Length: 326
Image (cartoon, rainbow, N blue to C red; front, side, top):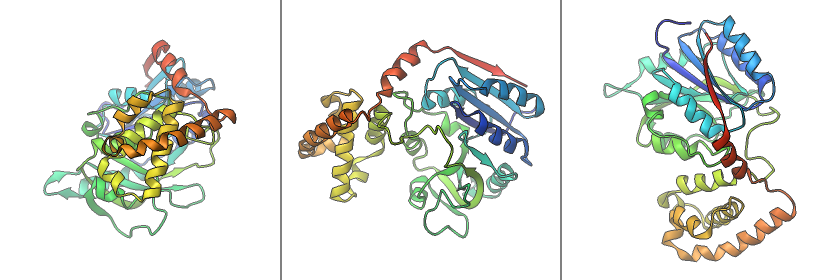
């Protein structure tokens, strides 16, 4: 184990992803820069994740912190636990079905060391990801030709998909992901903690994402994680952002917001209080009957999984263990 404090904390939450973790672990082992720690959250996996991580920890010098739950508690809660244990100056998340290119960490640190804004340290870097077909997951249109400094909000307008974010740990530790369901989108938190922060957007490719991975934890074809969706919409859709959207987009957002709130067992009055645009224009409430009819259709087709019920139960009954493996 490294005697000096790791500079980077890499955070990975995993749920039955042993075969993908092996690929990620191998990519970390091959990094040309090794002063980092890997914090792995095992979210109640029933495969051989635990056995693999413990064996792998004996083959590497970088620090590994292994946090496991005996039952599934969800990515949001698990990431919060991992962030609490992170000891690096910088934090970056890496999903279990992603992996790094050999010089990724070195390239990111080289950029951080070179770029300053008015003699102040950058809050972080936003770097490019590609998929296994060598197509960009970060930029769907034209890919920037050079690095660009700017505020988080400005740079996000140039991004169409998933990116790699490395940021000062002090930013990440100010607030936590909402623990309301097994899954909630990252934007529900990141847009808050990075507001007005200085970032550098780079076309440098640092990570490969496996979009064909099976058993992916996502908002897939089944209607699930509805409570997470409701809270995400309520937190991410500010009044200012909402008003700039086309009318048809506003209608779709509100119809789906009510639809998800019904499936999430959130009562009508609470849903109204949570979503600011509904407070300023009560005419939007007339869309609720449409949402209700759609929700009945969802249930008739057996498309709904009320994940929040199991989440609340598991959150109370889970047993968490923390292991420093090397």
